[in-house]
Image 1: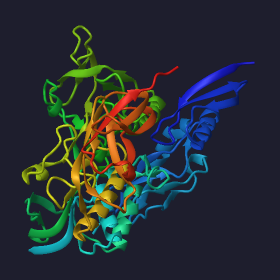
Image 2 (image 1 turned 90 degrees about the horizontal axis):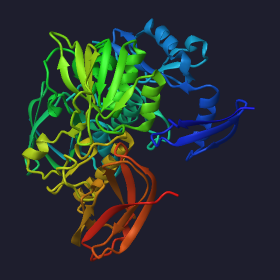
Image 3 (image 1 turned 90 degrees about the vertical axis):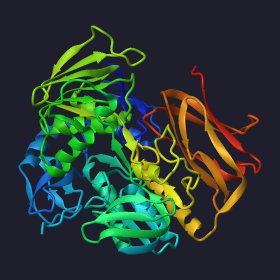
Image 4 (image 1 turned 60 degrees about the horizontal axis):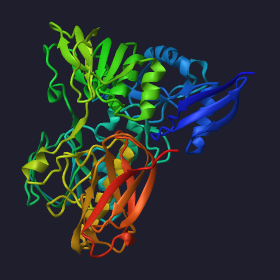
Length: 124
Length: 424
């Protein structure tokens, strides 16, 4: 029987609520300190499987700019960020790239899509 | 080339774009946006991280996505934009002189002007750090542009001075790209950026953040080789014998932003020494009638969402101004903040407006305060309204509405103060 309190700061919005997660035997007993429902969701996820959205860039061929910014459509497990970066580093996409275009359907087996976040035209 | 228009907007960042769209919504047809860069969106396209739009769009977007929402609306509404266009002078009579490679010299005569030039970063020189002048010293925003737009990494072993948002976000960006971020130093005893960025950018990557520390010397022959850091006392003066040497090849400065107001100064607009931006009324109108200011050129915001909101205030105000729908109060009301509030925008209220129900105020505090009442009082110290806030920090701008009906006709001063609520 191990009772624990884990204090975290919710990062779902800029407000930065201090949230306390009380748990017993690795099971959440209560979540307090959040100002909105997002805090509950975040705290639960942070307790079980912390996830982060990964924003980065991908190389563009024949683009008016050399890179297109991308992001994971949802959070991916925090521990896999560097592995994801390695896979993304190998990529190249051809211009034009459209905002929202799927760059990878299943990033390192997480089931999460990597999408473009900006339009990049072909270079003239 | 001579041009006339109803509204000229200087800058196509989030502030300028939002002014344009809101002015168009309010019936202003002839709008011209002048932008010095090749692209629209201002700084947003290089801010590839998520965290934008939670207030404004109620969803989390990256910088380029946030910008695209506005840019596509600008295109859709056929609002004219001149890119690669540098405004070199604006006269108090609202004559704009600008240059671009296509049209050459432009002479623009708008009926109203919205200043939306944004801000720039403070540099090493601005905070006077001595030492040699090798390569490898960047402002955080410059490094951001190199990595996110141009596509190369400016260094491998990084020390960051200043825990502003851009600094912390760049710490994560460097870490993700495989560089070693040795530490972030903050001269104050608290972070100047958002708490969430400390969590997701520093804590997540085990990047140490040292409070009450600064860089006292930079050393290096051609490239940065090391920095000497030191603890500071209460007066932010380096404490002797607390010096440490940190080996690194790159230093980033994230030490604050300055509104870019050279054009405003030259045309004689009065600036506030606290915000570095124009002194404005509730319409965000400067001391010159028909010239408005919003976004980071007015005061440095921490969230783009509030910049967009401020742009909308100006968009509506321009429409009222051009349609001659503004009506002066018998007295101007001066908004007077007292310690620890460092400033309030607007600085004064000039108009009577039966259509509006509330006036949007932005303010900032000098030090963190847990649980406080923000109190509005008239000149006789009668309380008009009070707001309770859970947490106030210098890094997070406070946004409040002042209900129009609470503002008495004969009032001349609104005192704004903060009272700490004692915790049990």
